Structure formats: C-alpha cells, structure tokens
Image (cartoon, rainbow, N blue to C red):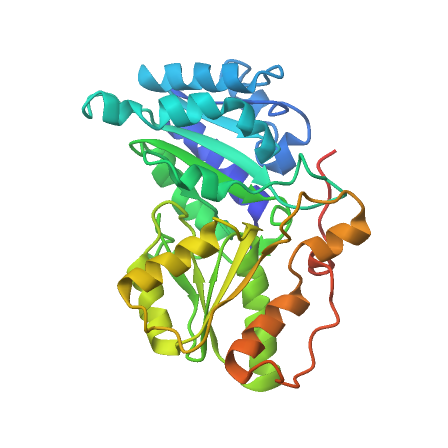
Length: 348
C-alpha cells in the first residue's frame, strides 16, 4: 500500500535524482509540511537551488519556469490552491502552451505544473475551484487528474522524463492521505483513459476523486442490487481515449458522468459531445451528471456538504440509470463527500 502523498514524494524525489536539471519551486515547497507531504525534506536533500520557496508571484514564477524549460532545465511548479494559477494564465496559455507551435516544432516547453483542488475546511469561493476544463480547452497543454497512487507512480516519471510540452497535473486534496495498492506489473496507467472497473449494466466516466467515489458506489450497487457498473477513469482531460468511452457505452447503453467541477461547459459536456459525434444512438436514456452546484462554493460546512456530490447522489445516479427513478433501493446514509475520508488532514 502506498499513500497518494508518498507516491508523489517518491516520484518527485526520483525525478530530481534522475535529472540533475530538474528543480521544484513554489510557495511552501520547503515548509516542513511539504505540500501535503508530497515534497517533504526534498529541500534538505537537494539544496535550496533545486527546491525553493518563492514569494507571492505566480505569474513571475511561471515566467521563470518557462524560461528555464526553454534552455533545457525541467521546472516543476506547485500551487497549493489551483485558484492561484489563475494569476499565471497569461504565461501558461499564451506562452508555455504555444511555443512548440509558434516556432514550427523547433522549441518546446517541457514542464510540470501541479495544482491542488477540492473541498476541505470551508475553502470558499476563491480556494476550491477545479479548472481542468479551462486548461484542457487550450491546445498545447496536457492536463491530467491522477486518481490513485498507481497513476502517480506510472505517469509522473514519464512526464518528468521530457514529455514534449507543459503538463498540468490536478491533484485533489482529499486523496493525499488515502492508501492505494500499487503493482509493479507491466500494465501501467497511460497518459490517457483506462477502465478502472469492468461492468455490463452502466458506464460511469469519472475524474480524480470521483473515480474513488464511483468505485465505492459500484461496490454498493453490486451488493444491494446486483448491478455491475463499469468505471472509466478519464485520467487525461486533454487527451482522453474517446473510443474506449464509446465502446463501454455501446456495451451498457447507460451513462453517468462524475466530475469535480461545474457541469456547464465542462468535462461532462465534452463527454456527451464526443459520444454524440461518434454515434448518437449509443444511449438508451439521457445521461446522469454529477458535479459542483452551479454557484461559487460556500464557506459554511453545512452548505459545503450539499454543494459537492455525495455518495448518496452517486449511488442514486447509477441506480436511476439502470432501474429508473422509482428504483426503491435503499441509498447510503452518508451525505457529505468527506464522510468517507475521515483520515483527511488539512494543510495548515
């Protein structure tokens, strides 16, 4: 078993050890808590020239990273809140994503940008947004949302080993303290999508922590109703395997989409667009969609609990797809998303 945070720490350590030109920069990377434990003590091990804190200068930090990438270094930048990356949008969207294209492939900008998303302790409207659809909208960026330690262990070394362009990795704060089984088998999590659980009755396409939620829900509906849900981890938001998704929906005829952000103009909408383009007759009924409520996130915990989709809603969406609205199957009493993550500990 390997925790999500320790998987990150291992891959960050391994990346710095294998690539002398790699470095980590960001607010708090040399703090004793080490960005949820993902870079703990790396500043001590590699020194302040390779792992270093920066002032509140998101755009400037990203500009420095881009310049370093263009001359052959490998920068890893971290944002302990994804919202902070909005201050660096000009650098990311107008520069990093476009250099390879604007210079006819001669120049490239390989770098890793780590963003932390998700709920906890009343983060509120400006510290809890999940902007994967925004970044995936721009060609030139690779956007991933690793849902397990296995995904981290498999993908991060590939990325740090000179993936051609900038990679945005979106990590959910509820995952850091969860333990996952990690295998050394030759089958690795790809930089695209994969089947996390096979099933025959309904397809659930999920991102990030909602993959874990979907797997928990699939176990519940199997035990309570004999329903076999197939779970697809979309994994790469910018480069999904749409043929894999279509093949699954062709088999099941039913679809639930579970994302960590808003549904409007987002990942869920893109899943539907891609399926309709391939075969508008794939679905036997309209899909169900789970995501954040269409409003800025509330700070009060009582409101935050109903703002995010819960296990209650995830199970109900799967049952409704297969059995209909009046399925009459008892739903989990768990209402808040965080009830299943009691081991979670905040960063500060």
